[in-house]
Length: 254
Image 1 (cartoon, rainbow, N blue to C red):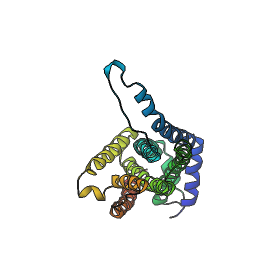
Image 2: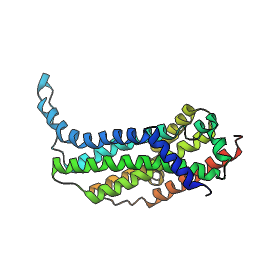
Image 3: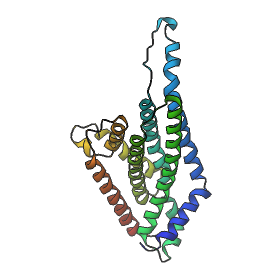
Image 4: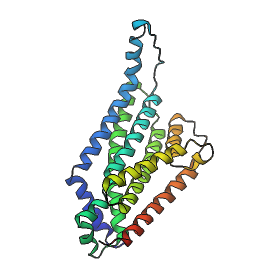
């Protein structure tokens, strides 16, 4: 891919210049710190309220896996939103400002332009995921004296792949639409629809949402259903998304 290295360095510098790296890391870190704390102390708070106004609450004592699964659930939901917000203007904004025309007039390819943006956004989210994951793991260990480290590592790797899927869907729509809001809205709609389809008995095993379920099973040590099919489908969708964005950008007059 002609000019990929140059474009990637530019995109990474842009991530730092616009403080996207700091924002993503800070927000992800909050979830990494709060999830184990809330899992540990929320049952105690609720149980202490038991009997008030005749209402009886009873929650069992949480364990380390509860903290990890709570973190995974929170970061998966918020990560989708973060991916859409980061990438919805990736191409639309560049075309509107004329930057895309300027960059693509140089000896760089449209494919490099797209993949550099996808890679930079994904690395940003990967850094946030790494920091928040470490925070969650350390706090869980401190609060519960136990943590499934390898299961958690595998879960974070699968989460990173899932975020790559969300980013590429958003970048694809960013290449199609003239409005950032429209691109973000369509991307979010598609991701939500795909997530809802994941509940279907047979089809769901091959959809992106199954990666999150697989990660949860690895944490719990009950990974009976290995979702290689879902991983293959996600990889294929990422390739198709990049190709679709390339076709769209190729046909646009910059």
